[in-house]
Image 1 (cartoon, rainbow, N blue to C red):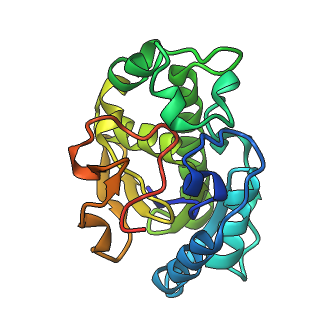
Image 2: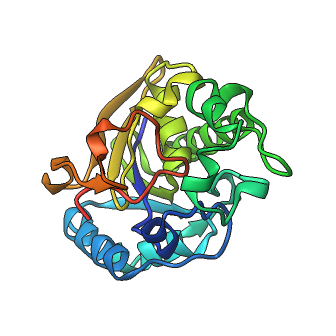
Image 3: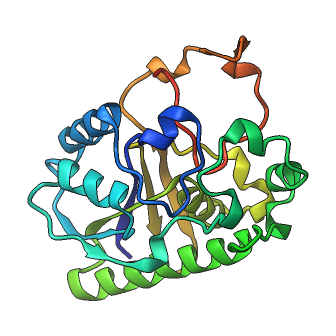
Length: 230
């Protein structure tokens, strides 16, 4: 089977201000555009058979900067989780919502008010990736490489499935802005080749948030967060 590169969009204005963008049309900020441009250097030499993208503008902008000569196919199956009433609200405010600890520890039970169930998000994301992987393999051969640009929680759900993890464990996975995660599917099992590859180590240095070291936080950033080192 083919090999898929999962590219998360670059940092957005909502990431920078600590808001949950969801499906709102937020765009890349200057840092996000620079991240996407740096991703181009990592992707330049790869013979990508197909490029698929979430329809949201932050993913389309990322693909335009990272792969300027590509003609991405837009697939709604890769769209961000529908956070419903949570969209556009500060994560700091959402962390006091009674639903927050369920999102953190039992996401398979979460249905966002007027939004999507996380289990449904996971199912449609995994189904979309597997369907595209089978299509690329059939059309371009088992040695082919292709790319899908999507969102933090979507990518984490796909990785959890590939690792054989229950969705309730997907918050243990990190997908930073403009990171690349690589999965190779086979007839019997997927192989997770790389996770959250950014080509830099600066994000490992703890930074303070509200006076606390980021490394002290045990809650996952819903939506994927802004990444580290910025």
